[in-house]
Length: 417
Picture 1 (cartoon, rainbow, N blue to C red):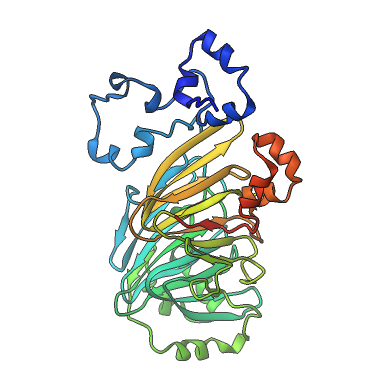
Picture 2 (tube, one colour):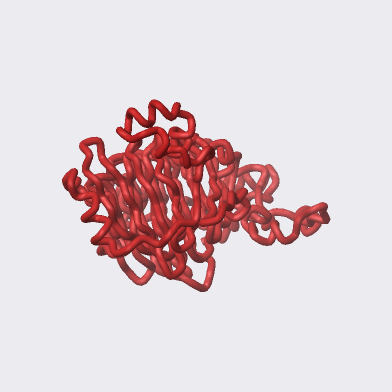
């Protein structure tokens, strides 16, 4: 068989291309890589073509090797699908801090706005509610959450690393960090335009309501409300709460909600597990109250690959919790781009866009994928190809139908190194 390399084929002149066009199917299959003309990638360029004498921020550039030197298979343009909490502005107050990545900062993120928040032990995120639903995952420490549903049923619970909560739009709630070291978590709102500055705060409302109206509403003399704060608290340092059972008993008179507002995603049995890693899932089929958000907690071992796949029912919003890796996204055009990610970064993959994630580090890569949908849905490329008539697939890929028997046919989710 003639060995036709990608570089040789794409670098051939008109005569060479004409000759190559009459090669056997087997010979053409030996040519693998970027089919575009002119040829792309550093492998198709001379040393002078890839030099970058500056100006440049070398510290920043070193964090994105696949943007500086993309795979030769990358092609076309694509909206930026990388953002990060690491360079987001932090709002700090006594009791904690928060930073956000919304659609205003990250235009591709139409479905989800993200907030990274930290509460010190005893730190309180004041009583409030939102126009959007709030989903969250705990990444460190412990937190006490409270929420009230429209039928007056209160829910109080403590959450830890790997736990979730979900508050439907309009449900009033609060958050408080617990000892010994408070809590850190990431919030995902099911509207990309939601921000920390568009929250409805109880102190704001009371401060902007006439005292006589408050007195009549609460059935107390106006004098008793004279110390209400004249500005919102947002996050403030409070006293650590007492035993959970005491707080639960204090609000029990209204009854108990039919479904819990918290869920232990980290404690669930993985839906996929092998040497390459694990996938854990929480959507409305398991976390009943979460009617607008589905999520997958994904762990990829070093060298592992989150298989080629896409999601037919929602954009994917990712928060990278640990480790490092790269993701390539494919769309019509053709368009394909690769980007590097590390802990604290955010990604968005648009609905129906093919993608895969590789762990390029030496430790486990962990990220959470969030979808604005009631139920999780995924289509695996290998699963599709192995459940399509073999002769039909073979004609597309120029392979023998028997080769398909080697493809995974069980949608493994993660492929080991």
